[in-house]
Image: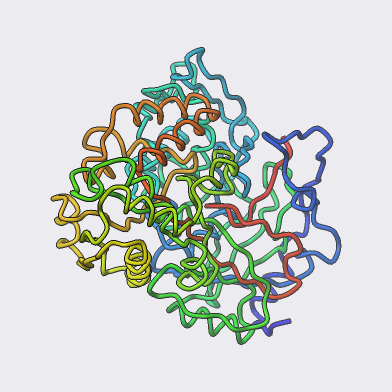
Length: 502
């Protein structure tokens, strides 16, 4: 047990140990169900009788719409709740949502807030709070990509949340795990929430205090009455604090230039980030202007080598443009587009492109992506092409990609949880570089949003036409001291994922 200052221990002892009761007899989760281990209430010997220390970049705040730092965001899953929660298998469960009623065409979606839900100050969570919060999230850098097809979020005359979309969306709830804040605190750095903990600050430092008046039941990954927060100064400092036993939990981004290696004897968990690495083609390229050569790109890429050598295993190979852990990823279809160097060589020869020079554009501000791009260039050279690297940073890269000054580029973006590809294919789409806008592909995107079974047709078309060449999805690395967490199952945007058993 780590040594804590006496004042803080006194605070911990004074906190009430009263918790929630746990009853899961009536809960049937969406989809295949959550893992049994992830649903067990905390038993004696769990985290409720331990002191667990987490970390906080205090100057970056804990506002989920303003703070994009991955170090702080795990704390948000203890402080805030959304209308829904999504677990690591992309299964959704209503949390603040009391009821949900879509229209017949799935373009108007009506929600109510659970009448029992309260913020940590005891005030009720209202539909007006949810409307204001979602509209604030729509304008945020972190969440705005989820709102491409959401045209309005309004409060009805009867006090319900009404979300309208420009297309049929049956999986809209998967996008609504966005934290709901009091409408008066949307721009505050440390707003209150409706989650199981509340942030407190004392002369000895910040900590999270367990709510004794929490409104719902849950089997929590952390149930200790107080969680000390060690203020972070740098990623290296967090690593050192963890390795010297001052921290019990650390989250890192192995795809970041700021990543530092952890070499302590710890438990390691992968957590999806949604960051998607892919190759895009210039549709006017002299080499990649035809679908048969574009579609062959997938066979040139040894994804497992990239994952192992450059991403230290903290990524998932993907031959389809969706997370392999999502329900939208068809493994049988994905197997058809795996690495096959000979197949790529044959396609290059058959197209009469052997020895042709292609320009590979990459953002040099991202050093890991730059190294991966150089490895991709070698893979293409092995397939019979000459490759000229175009390594640009900042505005020079942005201008080059907009002006189509490339044959192919290695791109990186964060896909929304429903793996919507619309931004690649609609006219003037934010990701439609190289003339990628395509009416037929965009229509398939809309079909997929209407029925997830249509993702198969979308992905098959994307791959057979060579519209995109998926490479991998990046993960965060979560380190914990051994024995602290028995069954941690970190989900994207919800590291300490829990069920409230509705």
